[in-house]
Length: 370
Image 1: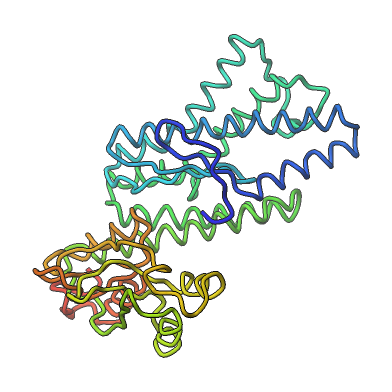
Image 2: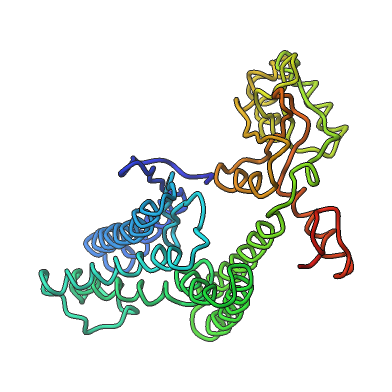
């Protein structure tokens, strides 16, 4: 995630802090200082650091449970609105997704119970009073952990409750249909949060927008993955594309960028085998830092995810998701690049399939809309 800095690694997962989180802490300090002086300012900052430590533990609840099912977890990022654990994939088995999703809120419940049992915390105030310096810090931490557990169980993506809901629905409806239903419910929840935000708290409006967009994105991604299953990769790959040689100058890449509609350019050797990828952002960065006479090899990202031309499209989609690749190369039996797959090509195939009459058999070997 851009605008993030790594602060270390925990159990193989890189922990990142988004720069807006640091700005958020600075704002908390300034607001508290103006209200009650340095003592209240430092109290507020310490409380927020402890709170986000609990958020980090929440995310590691997801991470360790995901690892138990063989799902890699490369990094976790702390944002002002909470934490985001990057899982390479979300298991489609309802039981596995349920356990991964519920693990986070259970961590918060466990923290609250430990604070009550061993720290003497008392849950006598609502989570709305967490910024009240008259309440002890341990009481506020216990209250806010219970609030986080309940808030995250709201049945809307990307909340844990949205994934719990999908897991429950998937038992009867199947993964794709369950996602569609859960996404619609999530969007209704977003509208409700936005309405409440208009009346009481404007922050809820921003949360509502985030939830609505996340629910739509989740449904779209699952639909893309579903339509790619069983489809030969050759039916969706781009075969007409521009490529670059590693010894070419960056100004040649600029001209190629302007002359085509591509945003990513594979870099191939003399044998036609892919050795790297040069994206639009790489070209712009190279022009600024290296100059137009720099070689493509110095500006490209080395290596490119590839699959065989005999593979199915869902394998390419899996690479796009798990490796966060912008493009996947398709190679022939000799390893030469013969095609490219991007999220856009899969989306275009999906739109074409939706446009066909439902009783039409498309070139992907199954009835469109099935």
